[in-house]
Figure 1 (cartoon, helix red, strand yellow):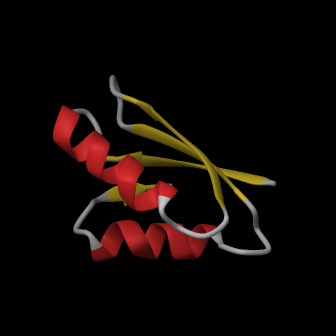
Figure 2: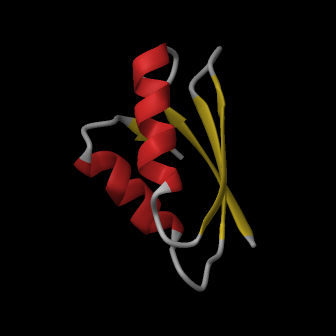
Length: 69
């Protein structure tokens, strides 16, 4: 299992947080999504044989979320 931390600008408000959790947890290979609402920190644990950190970042970008890794 791999882990990546991404800081998502919009992940500090209720609706975007719910959307991000929903989007990421639906991805094949996703194990866990934790979001710190104070600073937009998104910790993602995933099966690297099914999904990559780049695919996770691309998915966020496709849904118009702005992030830093």
